[in-house]
Length: 294
Image (cartoon, rainbow, N blue to C red; front, side):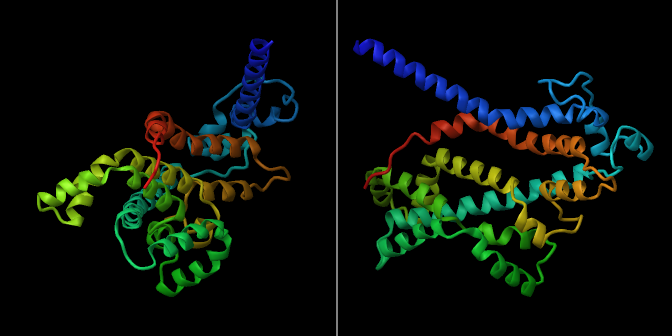
């Protein structure tokens, strides 16, 4: 009887996992299906799991590989994306935030884990409590600051509020630093290494996994940013892919929106982040298998 209960429980768990995976992946599948559907067939061919006449014309017209006449003939609005420019902008934006935030969070996490100073634990508790503060609360103060600095429509203005550190990343790295034996640093101290040398030549090489994890998570989260880049960098020279997609949809002069073009642009936007996770996802999972303890 006990074996039968275990089998039923395992079967129920697998069924739940399968349903969860299907529920997670189905929106991405439907986005791809819509992107491959001709605009004229969007409503008449919406019942099947795959379009009857799949085409790549939506991708071509979104990135500007078709003329205006061909775009309109394919059912598009005539709007196009300067895809390579927006892709470059998104890569620059994500690289600035991921690299700077990983560096500063590593230093802050190490300070909370190893340095003894008055009010350290109280300061760390207050820092962690910042996780409960919605980002929308800091939106307007940050905008006013960037405007007073003259950094609107610049990459430094777009990236500055997120470059220093985030509570989650500091907490995450602090927990890993606590798991590193102190004997490693004591040995480095005997060899005459200062605290700064210990951090760069001992701790950082041992923490490549968690540091890589934080940088990857930060890059993917930054790739999805929309509201802040829309407020601070709306000009084409600094416009991100996510912002460009919203503008693309609103450029349609037709009564109905260009949903097939929007889905094609969304697929192109997802691909870089998806490739990043595919190539480095295994290392991310492996690096998260740690425990932090004093």
